[in-house]
Image (tube, rainbow, N blue to C red; front, side, top):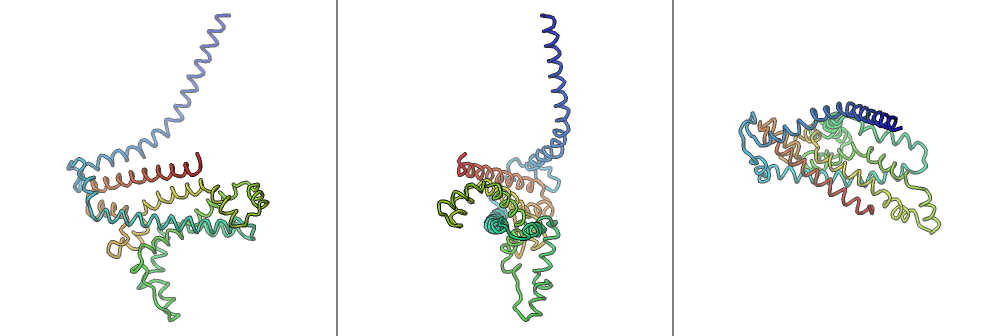
Length: 298
């Protein structure tokens, strides 16, 4: 009996080791993949941030980081990026909620409308940027030619309101995705809540305010976190539509990093700027998640 128990215990031990080895083998590939393609470049970029010069071969310690804090061009780019991110976030949430409320009703062809709304989001950002540049260009843009043929005043939005124009282009491109997220969130709300509020005599606005909005907090939190992260890293629109101008009106933070690296040839400084933005995104994401969880009662 004792011999049988020992033999059974050894078999279970070998089986556990075999299963553990199999799990380690399956995990090895993704660990190596992310280690080489994700974490190694991050570590290498952090190290580069302590150097300066065209070859990033002159050690300056934390000099690049302290220089970034006092650099007026960097501070301007950061403030401009925050304004851009806030504008995109507010317009995306408000318009996305409005469209989701409409498309959540039982209207004919709503699946078609949802598909149409997704087209800009599925379109390459390079195509979006070039498209709007060709439409809004003050000299050769399609819109001004149409306005001219109708004897109407021509627009110069890329010169007079460049940042606001980029915000609206970004909202146009992202609104389909945001709307579908809100539609999915609304369809996850149990109908019994609405029935109970109707029994209590609540109007449509009261049901939206007291039932829909509170239960959409997780969706709104997700939209806001993703929206802020995406907007803070925006590069393509200022690069393709305005080239950071006029002046430095649309010199967003990542566009500034690009110029520091490839125009001024200071890869160490650009690496330091990248890491500072990474820290800002991490801090903002943690704050947003904490606020969202507190409001959601977790």
